[in-house]
Length: 440
Image (cartoon, rainbow, N blue to C red; front, top):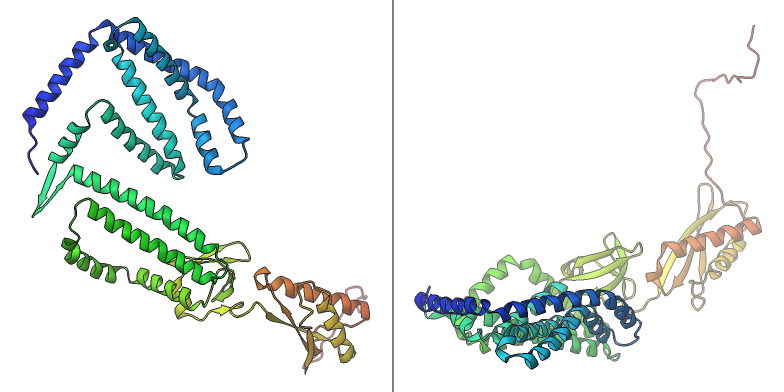
């Protein structure tokens, strides 16, 4: 750790403390503090009454949600705006009545207040509130150090707090600057990547799988370029990271095998277009339709509203049933039986008529019904029909067809048998009724 010039730092702090004590001893200092406190309290009181009305008015505005978000953020800081307006008015009056040196605290509070108001409002464009607050605090500290003329001293202090690692000198200022520059470049790359992704998704001539792949490639490429530019702009020699990156790559290869496997599987899925958003698939016990393809997993929504995040590797290594791979035509079978008293020709016609009456059953591909066997207690039939919307469910359409069969059979006197059982007793059994009189 490099040594910091402690005597110079102590002397500077001592000198500033002496000046502060002398300034605080002046009557006008307390007058300024009282004026600032009075303006702040007045802003709180007035803002508490005005802010709800202004916010309700702002929310009634129809337009871009981003602009409305900033307007609401400004309205929620009505107390600060009133405080700064009152403080600016008080400073103007004080300048007319006394020397400018006697309004130093008023000027300082006014500048810091405007800096905080501007940073807190502008940071509201970031949806994550925690990140927005951190960015607002960091920008305010930077602006405040410039206002009080301590930016150079702070930078010098951070630069002196350094750690020497071989030929590389790592200071607190270097780390802070690297983090800030990298964050800015990554934010800009993510913003640009989202823009390109939205533009690619709007091109109808491209397949859904290729749109997803192109959007992900654009984002990853921009993020990689942003990291390289950020590290290069901070003065880091990228060639010195070759050996280190090789060692890290080997470690990641062993430790993140599943992650890399899922990522490569995701790329293969997007390239060969075996599945795409909107497809109806069945994988193991999971049946549903694909909502989104991600770099690591595929989002599948089932009929009961549950969303399964299935790793991409499972779609490569396991058997997947894609109900809408080449087209969305799906054939369904319904098995049923009727009594031997029924006419099989009439049953076939009635079954086709019942299936055709269901809305989801295609009329362009008419249903068919075949007799399949002479069962133990019934004539067995198989009814086949086609649908084009498997994502709407299979069990429900089968149930609708079965209800239609029941209605048409009941209307035409066709009976659906139930199994009968005969019990043979090896020894005679006497059956006595409870109501029968007892024998003498």
